[in-house]
Length: 459
Image 1 (tube, rainbow, N blue to C red):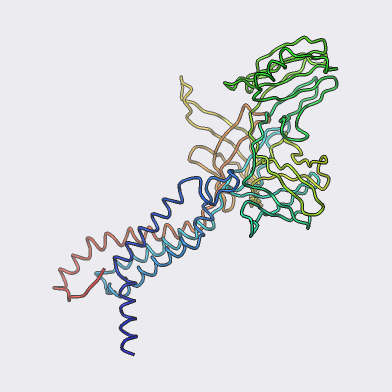
Image 2: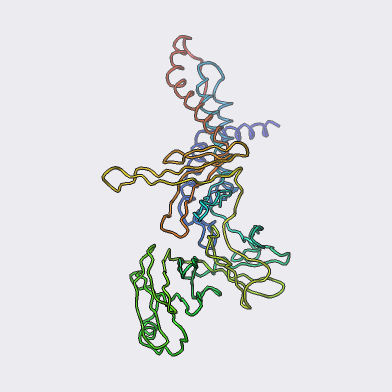
């Protein structure tokens, strides 16, 4: 019995030791430092850079924080007498414990991502959702009003695969063998017909845009032989005008117009600026909006046997359209898009106008101001989002992330994030801020008034 008690005392002495506390603190700092270096082991398919939710919820991190908290609790209870002079030490230790618990809660339950609004002829589209960072799902679209988000889970016996179940028959997605398909997003104006399209030679259904009597193609990274064939080859295969958009080695874009009679014209393209070319006897304006490198994933439906190309589009950008095709043709069961997980905001935000402000006499940016209407389920309020001046919508804080005025359609991207347990973080900081001055300044005064203090080991 005495041996067991001695062993227990030794265990408690070690568990409450300052050396163990410092070692655990060093391990926590080392873990957080290693986890903050991208890319993390939790990255999926090269699309995710860090996964803070997974890192803060990992068993190793939670164990380290739990052991550090237990060490501090034991050290405080066994080594620090509870009296008025030592009240500061107890407050600082209690604040540290609250801070540890609140930080873990904050890291494991925080949501962060982006919300997006597009400018249309009727104004800006309302903001109702946030697309979360470091998430990967399949968005199944069945009609224009219904979206079904299909979570992807790792396959136990093959870490290179993710599996989902959009139709009750299973879908496997190769996430580590993805390739990037070069693509270009264009605004094309043909008379009264204005459309935004994405062209890519590597995505089925996106190889060309066919007009009434012309065709537009995108051919990036031509070899010397392909370029020679394009500029000098036989054009008899074309029964109508063809506009071939090419990209040079320095990133310059141009459209090569090939006539059925063999004549060729070359027009330079500038991002965001329309270029007018004659195709099919009509003036067609082509505006390059952005170059894209779309990660294309191979997906296999278990039953029946069919394969799909799943380009990744985090916001399901207007103009990308139905992204999914199969080897046999367009998918018939619905539109699948590999994207980020979407959560609904507790209300609605509508943009009224945007203003990019610069300092007088210079182009140096001073502020970017967006006037918004916020509907929180009751009265609609008008507010302003500006630099360091976000808007709150339920638990989400919305602030500016980027503005793309040259895109078509124009878009404003807002950063959306929650801060769960932030009040507890402030409580912990307040306890530490009160406890440390008490321990360093008030405690010596109280001890001098009370005479010599009795000997006792304390931390």
